Length: 180
Image (cartoon, rainbow, N blue to C red):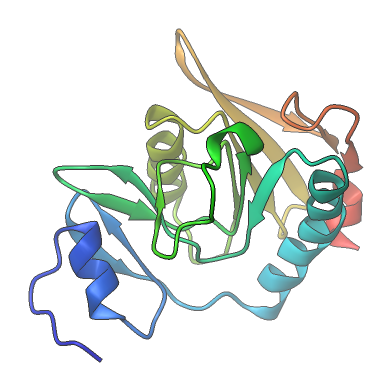
């Protein structure tokens, strides 16, 4: 492993090869704990049906947990959602071998008991203010889902019983299916 004493850019974060999940937020390294079993289970309950739908309909690419997306430069931010989608027209040639250069079109975050409300709000705003079309927040404790978008008044959060989006024409998934 390379030793990097001061990580402030996406490139230095990549070179460091840190063996623990982390994100770079406006030049500040933030370590993350691995998700618990329920966290991973909820991600897969979304990934299997939505990922299959995206692939069958050639809509773009889905990315698994901890994939890094460079969403800001100078200072750099590399965020890693639990699940992400990028539209086909934004994938130029091969999938990048390093972090994805830009935000996903959809970022999904599965909430953990250790997440504070301010942390989730900051992450959601980071995604949306840097070009992500939608953020889905999945809350296993409350068995709820929210779809967050950006409008003229700021971040709009809508609690939903069914996950659907213009990004995935014809797709819908009952929120209850994520948690059973």
